[in-house]
Image (cartoon, rainbow, N blue to C red; front, side, top):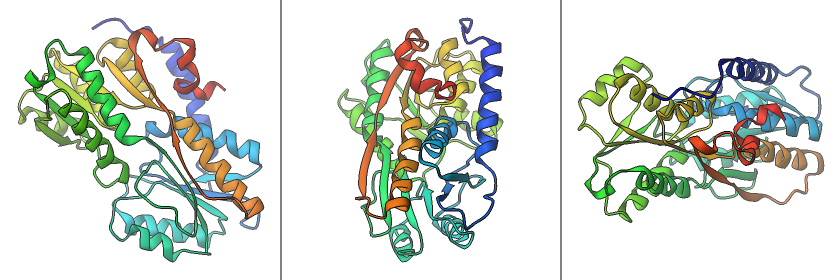
Length: 323
């Protein structure tokens, strides 16, 4: 493995700054009668994937003069749990809530039933329609990210994708964004005459993940569909010593470390900082003025390789905590 240029001192510094931001954001609101109370409900809120998103929300909160509280969550089990968290936000006096919605046929109806009780901003999803109480929707272009992953696999593969065994790893299927990315990947692979040999849900336990992969057809290429899966794929590839091409999408320092060390060849990075910033800005505008026109917005993404990891153009989205 090539020696990483991501020095331990930098990692420790950024980790400390990340911890400060997170614990400033993840705390109970004070007085519930303070205008501009926004609660945030996202899957596994302490996951590394959310560092840039939370940093963007913090900046928008400072700019807009609102208070943002990230509700501590583990892995969400479905729309019922999410509904309970939204109801709790209403009871605690929140003026608005930012929600990463689950995939469920009843989800739209549940959100609609909250009409006039609370304003909602949806993030990290691309399937919902604007509803009466939904202020806006901000999301990466998940299908395009999926297609980009196929393109990057073709770029780095030493043989045609049609001759490769391609394994896909993802951490969850209950998020509304997950299937969109998988659909985009499948379409992108078809353009190269290829398809995934298997799709593996990533267990929380690392040893179980390795055992599950051992039962699968040995891949030439491993494609990770989200940050958690990318970290697991990078850890697996680094430990196995196999000649394995790893491509994925993610944002965390751990994922970037695997890119810098050469374990991962390419990462598609959604601009989560802007998603966080825009979600708070939209909701704040509506809370303060009540005449905000609901909008659907998409955020950009970019492809990062080892040789462009520390380029000036990539610093803003890769290390937004430094802003």
